[in-house]
Image (cartoon, rainbow, N blue to C red; front, side):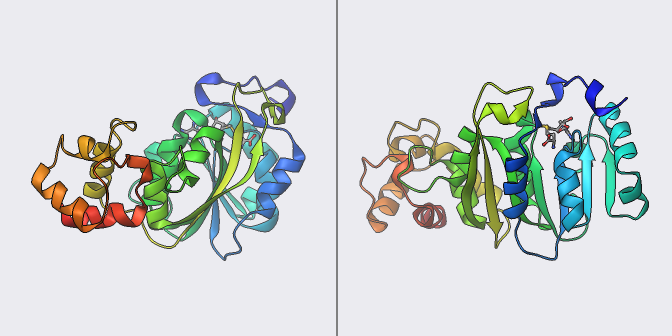
Length: 257
Ligand code: SAM
């Protein structure tokens, strides 16, 4: 099989990035580090080509047809160990870490599991930076700060481990086949590992009904008197909504309750 005869498989979220100017923007935005690069879903290898030029790459591809194609395209890079291609589901390969050395994740992710992959990368102590293309709406959630409409548990988890920003928005026309939604490349530079599970459980409760007050959401699980004391101590009004509270105050609130 050659590249031209590949038919994209919907079940694997295959939207191949064809716009070279976007590929270049991704490479330019790569963090300057000595870390290895992990690419999830190399697809037809268009981004991989740029990546192996600058770093050695570990790539994970689930589609066996594409894996065979990639083994052909990158014969030389595989032989010289510039590229290590893992054929199989990345989620099955991912234990507490994905590889056993520090890495930066650089990928145009399959959208059906993009949020899950980013959360796993945030929790992976070997993952130092994440540069990923996902649905615009998802990128906005990871990059949102307190007060913004998209601010929720994903933004708080991200801010708890480092800093995030949108690098560029990408229209459907950049892909083949074209997705129905806009996409975005975003960068998370990690300085800590993901916070503990109990904190994230509290966030889930805090945002169960985003339009209701934070007090109402939290009192479904936590003792009301304790919450009232905590709100008073942190000078939060009883009417405050979950997206209006800062990441710092969520951490304080967690400590108190
Ligand atoms: N990187 C290519 C590009 O930019 O054109 C392809 C990106 S495409 C959006 C997503 C890629 O992820 C596809 O190649 C797909 O087969 C692969 N993929 C989907 N699910 C996967 C999984 N669970 N593990 C590894 N790769 C997966």
